[in-house]
Length: 419
Image 1 (cartoon, rainbow, N blue to C red):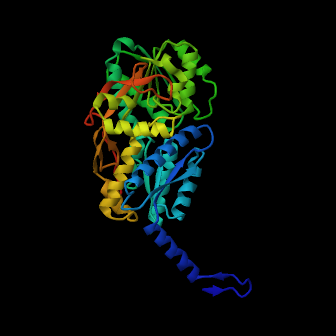
Image 2 (tube, helix red, strand yellow; image 1 turned 90 degrees about the horizontal axis):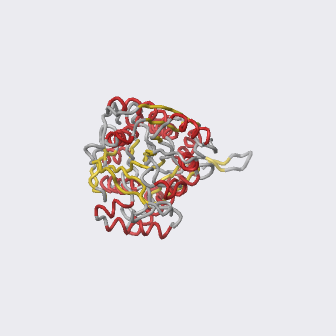
Image 3 (tube, rainbow, N blue to C red; image 1 turned 180 degrees about the vertical axis):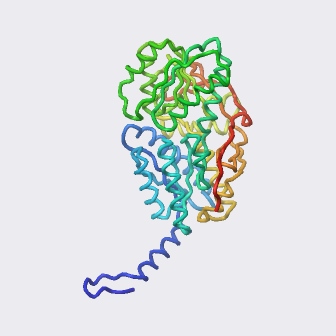
Protein backbone atom coordinates (compact mmCIF):
# COMPACT_ATOMS: atom_id res chain seq x y z
CA UNK A 1 0.00 0.00 0.00
CA UNK A 2 1.31 3.46 -0.95
CA UNK A 3 0.58 6.74 0.80
CA UNK A 4 0.42 9.97 -1.16
CA UNK A 5 2.57 12.38 0.83
CA UNK A 6 0.58 15.43 -0.26
CA UNK A 7 -2.96 14.15 0.34
CA UNK A 8 -2.39 11.50 2.99
CA UNK A 9 -4.66 9.13 1.04
CA UNK A 10 -3.67 5.48 0.92
CA UNK A 11 -3.82 3.94 -2.57
CA UNK A 12 -2.32 1.08 -4.45
CA UNK A 13 -2.08 -2.63 -4.62
CA UNK A 14 -3.07 -3.58 -1.05
CA UNK A 15 -6.45 -1.87 -1.33
CA UNK A 16 -6.97 -3.37 -4.79
CA UNK A 17 -5.93 -6.81 -3.54
CA UNK A 18 -8.25 -6.53 -0.56
CA UNK A 19 -11.19 -5.61 -2.81
CA UNK A 20 -10.37 -8.45 -5.20
CA UNK A 21 -10.21 -11.01 -2.39
CA UNK A 22 -13.49 -9.69 -0.98
CA UNK A 23 -15.13 -9.94 -4.40
CA UNK A 24 -13.86 -13.49 -4.98
CA UNK A 25 -15.00 -14.60 -1.54
CA UNK A 26 -18.44 -13.09 -2.09
CA UNK A 27 -18.73 -14.67 -5.52
CA UNK A 28 -17.90 -18.10 -4.14
CA UNK A 29 -19.83 -18.00 -0.87
CA UNK A 30 -22.58 -15.43 -1.36
CA UNK A 31 -25.83 -15.79 -3.29
CA UNK A 32 -25.96 -16.39 -7.01
CA UNK A 33 -27.21 -13.05 -8.23
CA UNK A 34 -29.28 -12.33 -11.32
CA UNK A 35 -29.72 -8.74 -12.48
CA UNK A 36 -33.32 -8.09 -13.52
CA UNK A 37 -33.15 -5.23 -16.04
CA UNK A 38 -36.69 -4.06 -16.77
CA UNK A 39 -38.95 -0.96 -16.55
CA UNK A 40 -39.88 -0.40 -12.91
CA UNK A 41 -41.10 3.14 -13.53
CA UNK A 42 -42.95 4.79 -16.39
CA UNK A 43 -45.77 3.45 -18.61
CA UNK A 44 -44.59 -0.18 -18.51
CA UNK A 45 -43.84 -0.29 -14.78
CA UNK A 46 -46.73 -2.70 -14.20
CA UNK A 47 -45.17 -5.18 -16.63
CA UNK A 48 -41.73 -4.87 -15.02
CA UNK A 49 -43.20 -5.26 -11.55
CA UNK A 50 -45.13 -8.39 -12.55
CA UNK A 51 -41.99 -10.01 -13.95
CA UNK A 52 -40.02 -9.12 -10.84
CA UNK A 53 -42.61 -10.84 -8.66
CA UNK A 54 -42.36 -13.96 -10.83
CA UNK A 55 -38.59 -14.08 -10.50
CA UNK A 56 -38.59 -13.41 -6.77
CA UNK A 57 -41.25 -16.05 -6.16
CA UNK A 58 -39.39 -18.76 -8.04
CA UNK A 59 -36.07 -17.78 -6.43
CA UNK A 60 -37.69 -18.10 -3.02
CA UNK A 61 -39.17 -21.51 -3.88
CA UNK A 62 -35.86 -22.77 -5.24
CA UNK A 63 -34.01 -21.44 -2.19
CA UNK A 64 -36.35 -23.44 0.02
CA UNK A 65 -35.08 -26.51 -1.83
CA UNK A 66 -31.42 -25.64 -1.33
CA UNK A 67 -30.93 -23.04 -4.05
CA UNK A 68 -28.16 -23.87 -6.49
CA UNK A 69 -25.36 -25.99 -5.04
CA UNK A 70 -26.42 -24.86 -1.57
CA UNK A 71 -26.29 -21.17 -2.46
CA UNK A 72 -29.31 -18.89 -2.46
CA UNK A 73 -30.52 -17.15 -5.60
CA UNK A 74 -30.89 -13.37 -5.35
CA UNK A 75 -32.79 -11.28 -7.89
CA UNK A 76 -31.33 -7.77 -8.19
CA UNK A 77 -33.89 -5.37 -9.74
CA UNK A 78 -32.58 -2.59 -11.98
CA UNK A 79 -34.91 0.00 -13.54
CA UNK A 80 -34.08 0.57 -17.20
CA UNK A 81 -37.09 2.86 -17.81
CA UNK A 82 -37.57 0.89 -21.06
CA UNK A 83 -34.44 2.56 -22.47
CA UNK A 84 -31.84 0.57 -24.46
CA UNK A 85 -29.04 2.97 -23.47
CA UNK A 86 -30.03 2.84 -19.81
CA UNK A 87 -30.07 -0.95 -20.02
CA UNK A 88 -26.51 -1.02 -21.33
CA UNK A 89 -25.38 1.14 -18.43
CA UNK A 90 -27.15 -1.16 -15.97
CA UNK A 91 -25.47 -4.17 -17.53
CA UNK A 92 -22.10 -2.54 -16.94
CA UNK A 93 -23.08 -1.79 -13.35
CA UNK A 94 -24.10 -5.41 -12.86
CA UNK A 95 -20.79 -6.67 -14.24
CA UNK A 96 -18.86 -4.20 -12.08
CA UNK A 97 -20.72 -5.59 -9.06
CA UNK A 98 -19.71 -9.13 -9.97
CA UNK A 99 -23.11 -10.22 -11.26
CA UNK A 100 -22.63 -12.82 -13.99
CA UNK A 101 -26.28 -13.27 -15.05
CA UNK A 102 -28.68 -10.70 -16.45
CA UNK A 103 -32.28 -11.26 -17.49
CA UNK A 104 -34.65 -9.08 -19.53
CA UNK A 105 -37.58 -9.57 -21.86
CA UNK A 106 -39.66 -6.44 -22.42
CA UNK A 107 -38.66 -4.87 -25.71
CA UNK A 108 -36.57 -6.42 -28.48
CA UNK A 109 -34.94 -3.01 -28.97
CA UNK A 110 -33.60 -3.32 -25.43
CA UNK A 111 -32.68 -6.96 -26.03
CA UNK A 112 -30.65 -6.09 -29.12
CA UNK A 113 -28.69 -3.48 -27.19
CA UNK A 114 -28.01 -5.98 -24.40
CA UNK A 115 -26.80 -8.67 -26.80
CA UNK A 116 -24.26 -6.25 -28.26
CA UNK A 117 -23.20 -5.00 -24.83
CA UNK A 118 -22.78 -8.51 -23.40
CA UNK A 119 -20.71 -9.58 -26.42
CA UNK A 120 -18.54 -6.47 -26.13
CA UNK A 121 -18.00 -6.98 -22.39
CA UNK A 122 -17.11 -10.63 -22.82
CA UNK A 123 -14.55 -9.89 -25.53
CA UNK A 124 -12.86 -7.26 -23.39
CA UNK A 125 -13.35 -8.75 -19.96
CA UNK A 126 -12.39 -12.42 -20.07
CA UNK A 127 -12.30 -12.71 -16.28
CA UNK A 128 -15.74 -11.23 -15.67
CA UNK A 129 -18.13 -12.44 -18.34
CA UNK A 130 -21.92 -12.14 -18.33
CA UNK A 131 -24.71 -14.37 -19.63
CA UNK A 132 -27.93 -12.85 -20.97
CA UNK A 133 -31.11 -14.82 -20.21
CA UNK A 134 -33.98 -13.58 -22.39
CA UNK A 135 -37.45 -14.56 -21.21
CA UNK A 136 -39.69 -12.46 -23.48
CA UNK A 137 -38.01 -10.43 -26.25
CA UNK A 138 -39.14 -12.20 -29.43
CA UNK A 139 -37.57 -10.48 -32.46
CA UNK A 140 -36.42 -13.41 -34.67
CA UNK A 141 -33.21 -11.52 -35.51
CA UNK A 142 -31.92 -12.21 -31.98
CA UNK A 143 -31.55 -15.90 -32.83
CA UNK A 144 -30.77 -15.37 -36.51
CA UNK A 145 -28.41 -12.71 -37.87
CA UNK A 146 -27.85 -11.19 -34.41
CA UNK A 147 -27.43 -14.48 -32.53
CA UNK A 148 -24.83 -14.67 -29.77
CA UNK A 149 -23.16 -17.45 -27.80
CA UNK A 150 -23.98 -15.49 -24.63
CA UNK A 151 -27.70 -15.01 -25.33
CA UNK A 152 -30.42 -17.62 -24.68
CA UNK A 153 -34.13 -17.14 -25.38
CA UNK A 154 -36.86 -18.97 -23.42
CA UNK A 155 -39.83 -17.50 -25.26
CA UNK A 156 -40.95 -18.64 -28.71
CA UNK A 157 -39.76 -16.07 -31.21
CA UNK A 158 -42.20 -13.94 -33.14
CA UNK A 159 -41.92 -16.06 -36.29
CA UNK A 160 -42.93 -19.21 -34.41
CA UNK A 161 -45.88 -17.45 -32.75
CA UNK A 162 -47.12 -15.85 -35.95
CA UNK A 163 -46.85 -19.13 -37.85
CA UNK A 164 -49.00 -20.79 -35.16
CA UNK A 165 -51.60 -18.03 -35.31
CA UNK A 166 -51.74 -18.13 -39.12
CA UNK A 167 -52.17 -21.91 -39.11
CA UNK A 168 -55.09 -21.59 -36.71
CA UNK A 169 -56.61 -18.69 -38.66
CA UNK A 170 -56.53 -20.92 -41.75
CA UNK A 171 -58.98 -23.25 -39.97
CA UNK A 172 -61.29 -20.25 -39.42
CA UNK A 173 -61.46 -19.18 -43.07
CA UNK A 174 -65.22 -18.71 -43.01
CA UNK A 175 -64.91 -16.08 -40.26
CA UNK A 176 -61.88 -14.21 -41.60
CA UNK A 177 -62.10 -12.07 -44.71
CA UNK A 178 -60.45 -8.76 -43.84
CA UNK A 179 -57.42 -8.44 -41.54
CA UNK A 180 -56.16 -5.25 -39.91
CA UNK A 181 -52.62 -5.17 -38.49
CA UNK A 182 -51.77 -2.80 -35.63
CA UNK A 183 -48.42 -3.02 -33.87
CA UNK A 184 -45.83 -1.06 -31.93
CA UNK A 185 -43.28 0.69 -34.12
CA UNK A 186 -40.07 -1.16 -33.30
CA UNK A 187 -38.43 -4.37 -34.49
CA UNK A 188 -41.02 -6.75 -33.00
CA UNK A 189 -44.04 -4.93 -34.42
CA UNK A 190 -42.30 -4.26 -37.73
CA UNK A 191 -41.62 -7.97 -38.13
CA UNK A 192 -45.29 -8.87 -37.55
CA UNK A 193 -46.38 -6.23 -40.07
CA UNK A 194 -44.08 -7.65 -42.75
CA UNK A 195 -44.42 -11.35 -42.01
CA UNK A 196 -48.21 -11.49 -41.62
CA UNK A 197 -48.65 -10.11 -45.13
CA UNK A 198 -46.43 -12.90 -46.44
CA UNK A 199 -48.28 -15.58 -44.46
CA UNK A 200 -51.64 -14.62 -45.95
CA UNK A 201 -50.27 -15.74 -49.29
CA UNK A 202 -48.20 -18.66 -48.07
CA UNK A 203 -51.10 -20.17 -46.10
CA UNK A 204 -53.60 -19.42 -48.87
CA UNK A 205 -55.79 -17.57 -46.42
CA UNK A 206 -58.96 -16.48 -48.17
CA UNK A 207 -58.53 -12.99 -46.74
CA UNK A 208 -56.94 -9.64 -47.47
CA UNK A 209 -54.94 -7.17 -45.41
CA UNK A 210 -57.09 -4.04 -45.27
CA UNK A 211 -54.98 -1.99 -42.88
CA UNK A 212 -51.46 -1.89 -41.48
CA UNK A 213 -50.55 0.56 -38.71
CA UNK A 214 -47.38 1.00 -36.68
CA UNK A 215 -47.75 3.33 -33.70
CA UNK A 216 -45.16 4.76 -31.26
CA UNK A 217 -44.41 2.42 -28.38
CA UNK A 218 -45.67 3.55 -24.95
CA UNK A 219 -46.80 6.96 -26.23
CA UNK A 220 -50.43 6.47 -27.31
CA UNK A 221 -53.02 7.24 -24.63
CA UNK A 222 -56.05 7.42 -26.91
CA UNK A 223 -56.40 4.67 -29.52
CA UNK A 224 -59.70 6.02 -30.88
CA UNK A 225 -58.13 7.39 -34.12
CA UNK A 226 -56.74 3.92 -34.83
CA UNK A 227 -60.09 2.33 -33.98
CA UNK A 228 -61.75 4.63 -36.53
CA UNK A 229 -59.37 3.35 -39.18
CA UNK A 230 -60.14 -0.27 -38.25
CA UNK A 231 -63.85 0.49 -38.46
CA UNK A 232 -63.54 2.25 -41.82
CA UNK A 233 -61.54 -0.64 -43.25
CA UNK A 234 -64.38 -3.09 -42.65
CA UNK A 235 -62.00 -5.50 -40.90
CA UNK A 236 -63.42 -8.52 -39.13
CA UNK A 237 -60.07 -9.55 -37.64
CA UNK A 238 -57.27 -7.65 -35.87
CA UNK A 239 -53.75 -9.05 -35.41
CA UNK A 240 -51.50 -7.34 -32.85
CA UNK A 241 -48.22 -8.10 -31.14
CA UNK A 242 -48.73 -5.20 -28.70
CA UNK A 243 -47.98 -5.74 -25.03
CA UNK A 244 -48.45 -3.95 -21.72
CA UNK A 245 -50.59 -0.81 -21.69
CA UNK A 246 -50.35 -0.55 -25.47
CA UNK A 247 -52.39 -3.73 -25.74
CA UNK A 248 -54.73 -3.06 -22.82
CA UNK A 249 -55.66 0.39 -24.14
CA UNK A 250 -56.09 -0.94 -27.68
CA UNK A 251 -58.41 -3.77 -26.62
CA UNK A 252 -60.39 -1.46 -24.35
CA UNK A 253 -60.83 1.01 -27.21
CA UNK A 254 -62.02 -1.75 -29.55
CA UNK A 255 -64.53 -2.84 -26.94
CA UNK A 256 -65.70 0.70 -26.17
CA UNK A 257 -66.33 1.35 -29.86
CA UNK A 258 -68.41 -1.81 -30.10
CA UNK A 259 -66.38 -3.18 -33.01
CA UNK A 260 -67.41 -6.67 -34.08
CA UNK A 261 -63.89 -8.05 -34.64
CA UNK A 262 -61.86 -10.99 -33.41
CA UNK A 263 -58.49 -9.99 -31.95
CA UNK A 264 -55.48 -12.28 -32.31
CA UNK A 265 -52.67 -11.39 -29.92
CA UNK A 266 -49.37 -12.56 -28.50
CA UNK A 267 -50.03 -11.18 -25.00
CA UNK A 268 -53.80 -11.00 -24.53
CA UNK A 269 -53.85 -13.26 -21.48
CA UNK A 270 -52.30 -11.09 -18.80
CA UNK A 271 -50.79 -7.90 -17.47
CA UNK A 272 -53.98 -5.87 -17.62
CA UNK A 273 -55.55 -6.91 -20.91
CA UNK A 274 -58.21 -9.39 -19.66
CA UNK A 275 -59.32 -6.85 -17.07
CA UNK A 276 -59.58 -4.22 -19.79
CA UNK A 277 -62.10 -6.21 -21.83
CA UNK A 278 -63.73 -8.57 -19.30
CA UNK A 279 -66.53 -10.94 -20.36
CA UNK A 280 -67.01 -9.07 -23.63
CA UNK A 281 -63.82 -10.74 -24.84
CA UNK A 282 -65.41 -14.21 -24.77
CA UNK A 283 -64.81 -16.04 -28.07
CA UNK A 284 -63.23 -12.83 -29.40
CA UNK A 285 -59.79 -12.35 -27.80
CA UNK A 286 -57.20 -14.99 -28.77
CA UNK A 287 -53.61 -15.48 -27.59
CA UNK A 288 -50.66 -17.72 -28.46
CA UNK A 289 -48.58 -18.80 -25.45
CA UNK A 290 -46.44 -21.59 -24.05
CA UNK A 291 -48.98 -22.07 -21.26
CA UNK A 292 -52.16 -20.74 -19.68
CA UNK A 293 -53.85 -21.63 -16.41
CA UNK A 294 -56.48 -24.00 -17.80
CA UNK A 295 -53.78 -26.10 -19.46
CA UNK A 296 -53.31 -27.55 -15.98
CA UNK A 297 -56.97 -28.57 -15.91
CA UNK A 298 -56.88 -30.02 -19.42
CA UNK A 299 -53.69 -32.01 -18.92
CA UNK A 300 -53.84 -32.89 -15.23
CA UNK A 301 -50.85 -30.89 -14.05
CA UNK A 302 -51.83 -30.94 -10.37
CA UNK A 303 -48.41 -30.07 -8.95
CA UNK A 304 -48.02 -27.07 -11.22
CA UNK A 305 -51.59 -26.06 -10.43
CA UNK A 306 -50.59 -25.85 -6.76
CA UNK A 307 -47.60 -23.74 -7.83
CA UNK A 308 -49.58 -20.97 -9.49
CA UNK A 309 -52.28 -21.09 -6.84
CA UNK A 310 -49.64 -20.35 -4.22
CA UNK A 311 -48.32 -17.50 -6.36
CA UNK A 312 -51.84 -16.08 -6.57
CA UNK A 313 -52.20 -16.18 -2.80
CA UNK A 314 -48.93 -14.29 -2.48
CA UNK A 315 -49.77 -11.73 -5.16
CA UNK A 316 -53.58 -11.60 -5.50
CA UNK A 317 -53.42 -8.62 -7.85
CA UNK A 318 -51.70 -10.59 -10.66
CA UNK A 319 -51.58 -14.14 -12.05
CA UNK A 320 -48.75 -16.57 -12.66
CA UNK A 321 -48.23 -15.69 -16.31
CA UNK A 322 -44.61 -16.32 -17.31
CA UNK A 323 -44.30 -20.10 -17.45
CA UNK A 324 -41.10 -19.52 -19.39
CA UNK A 325 -39.48 -17.99 -16.29
CA UNK A 326 -40.07 -21.29 -14.51
CA UNK A 327 -38.30 -23.10 -17.36
CA UNK A 328 -35.49 -20.56 -17.53
CA UNK A 329 -34.61 -20.70 -13.86
CA UNK A 330 -34.67 -24.48 -13.63
CA UNK A 331 -32.55 -24.90 -16.75
CA UNK A 332 -30.03 -22.36 -15.44
CA UNK A 333 -29.84 -24.30 -12.17
CA UNK A 334 -29.29 -27.54 -14.08
CA UNK A 335 -26.49 -25.98 -16.15
CA UNK A 336 -24.67 -24.47 -13.16
CA UNK A 337 -24.85 -27.72 -11.23
CA UNK A 338 -23.58 -29.65 -14.23
CA UNK A 339 -20.58 -27.31 -14.48
CA UNK A 340 -20.09 -27.18 -10.71
CA UNK A 341 -19.54 -23.42 -10.70
CA UNK A 342 -21.50 -20.22 -11.30
CA UNK A 343 -18.39 -18.37 -12.47
CA UNK A 344 -17.45 -20.28 -15.63
CA UNK A 345 -19.82 -18.54 -18.03
CA UNK A 346 -18.49 -20.27 -21.14
CA UNK A 347 -19.00 -23.69 -19.58
CA UNK A 348 -22.50 -22.80 -18.38
CA UNK A 349 -23.43 -21.59 -21.87
CA UNK A 350 -22.15 -24.86 -23.34
CA UNK A 351 -24.17 -26.81 -20.79
CA UNK A 352 -27.32 -24.94 -21.81
CA UNK A 353 -26.73 -25.59 -25.51
CA UNK A 354 -28.88 -28.50 -26.61
CA UNK A 355 -30.25 -29.06 -23.10
CA UNK A 356 -33.48 -31.01 -22.75
CA UNK A 357 -35.66 -30.21 -19.77
CA UNK A 358 -38.84 -31.90 -18.59
CA UNK A 359 -41.13 -28.92 -18.11
CA UNK A 360 -44.63 -29.35 -16.66
CA UNK A 361 -45.99 -28.98 -20.21
CA UNK A 362 -43.60 -31.51 -21.76
CA UNK A 363 -40.00 -31.81 -22.91
CA UNK A 364 -38.46 -28.56 -24.09
CA UNK A 365 -35.10 -28.14 -25.82
CA UNK A 366 -32.64 -25.26 -26.03
CA UNK A 367 -31.61 -25.49 -29.68
CA UNK A 368 -27.82 -25.49 -29.79
CA UNK A 369 -27.49 -23.80 -33.16
CA UNK A 370 -29.08 -20.48 -32.17
CA UNK A 371 -30.09 -20.73 -28.47
CA UNK A 372 -33.82 -20.62 -29.22
CA UNK A 373 -36.07 -22.68 -26.93
CA UNK A 374 -38.35 -25.18 -28.65
CA UNK A 375 -41.48 -26.00 -26.65
CA UNK A 376 -45.15 -26.93 -27.02
CA UNK A 377 -47.45 -23.98 -27.66
CA UNK A 378 -51.14 -23.27 -27.16
CA UNK A 379 -53.65 -21.01 -28.85
CA UNK A 380 -56.51 -20.11 -26.54
CA UNK A 381 -59.55 -17.85 -26.50
CA UNK A 382 -61.34 -16.03 -23.68
CA UNK A 383 -64.08 -18.09 -22.04
CA UNK A 384 -66.31 -17.19 -19.10
CA UNK A 385 -66.50 -20.88 -18.14
CA UNK A 386 -62.76 -21.41 -17.79
CA UNK A 387 -61.78 -22.74 -14.37
CA UNK A 388 -59.25 -19.97 -13.76
CA UNK A 389 -59.91 -16.37 -14.63
CA UNK A 390 -57.22 -13.97 -15.76
CA UNK A 391 -56.45 -10.62 -14.13
CA UNK A 392 -59.39 -11.11 -11.71
CA UNK A 393 -61.61 -10.36 -14.72
CA UNK A 394 -64.06 -13.24 -14.33
CA UNK A 395 -62.94 -14.57 -17.71
CA UNK A 396 -60.23 -17.13 -18.39
CA UNK A 397 -58.95 -18.94 -21.47
CA UNK A 398 -59.67 -22.29 -23.09
CA UNK A 399 -57.36 -24.04 -25.52
CA UNK A 400 -58.46 -24.08 -29.16
CA UNK A 401 -55.21 -25.46 -30.61
CA UNK A 402 -52.44 -27.52 -29.05
CA UNK A 403 -49.22 -27.19 -31.05
CA UNK A 404 -46.68 -29.98 -30.43
CA UNK A 405 -43.05 -29.01 -30.07
CA UNK A 406 -42.06 -30.40 -33.46
CA UNK A 407 -44.45 -27.93 -35.10
CA UNK A 408 -43.55 -24.99 -32.85
CA UNK A 409 -40.26 -24.33 -34.58
CA UNK A 410 -38.66 -22.47 -37.45
CA UNK A 411 -35.43 -22.48 -39.41
CA UNK A 412 -32.51 -20.33 -38.33
CA UNK A 413 -29.79 -18.51 -40.22
CA UNK A 414 -27.62 -18.16 -37.11
CA UNK A 415 -23.88 -18.43 -37.77
CA UNK A 416 -22.69 -18.25 -34.18
CA UNK A 417 -19.19 -17.35 -33.04
CA UNK A 418 -18.15 -19.53 -30.16
CA UNK A 419 -15.20 -19.00 -27.79
